[in-house]
Image (tube, rainbow, N blue to C red; front, side, top):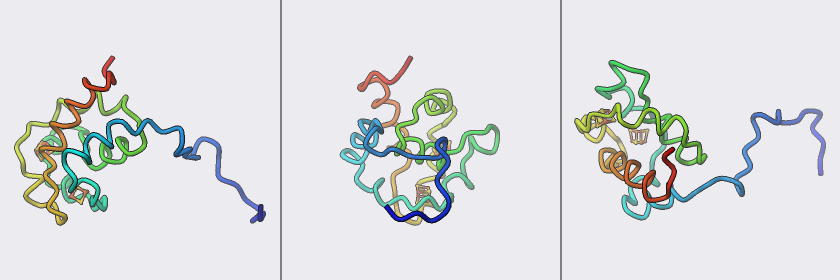
Length: 113
Ligand code: SF4
Ligand code: SF4
């Protein structure tokens, strides 16, 4: 392996083969548009819940892909399902449906505590 004189810090290393991909697979299967998310943050910028709390739908998107469910469990119920996020998404993703699928998926795959 080529040495570049530096290495990725262990705490910042992502081991993709160890990620629990059950939830992301379930969401993309039922809402295929979600796979085109480019993490632009428009949804978060317009989010009603984000105006009042630390709820951050873009961060949830990333955590779903990384199989990190702790924060998702704590935050998901802050969404009011108002639908403002889906009106501004440049990729036309039905983010409100994504939220509903997250809720269903957490239960279906026994990811709730
Ligand atoms: S607005 Fe759409 S493309 Fe941008 S981060 Fe949100 S879901 Fe992804
Ligand atoms: S539906 Fe939920 S995530 Fe979307 S803008 Fe409304 S509160 Fe935010």
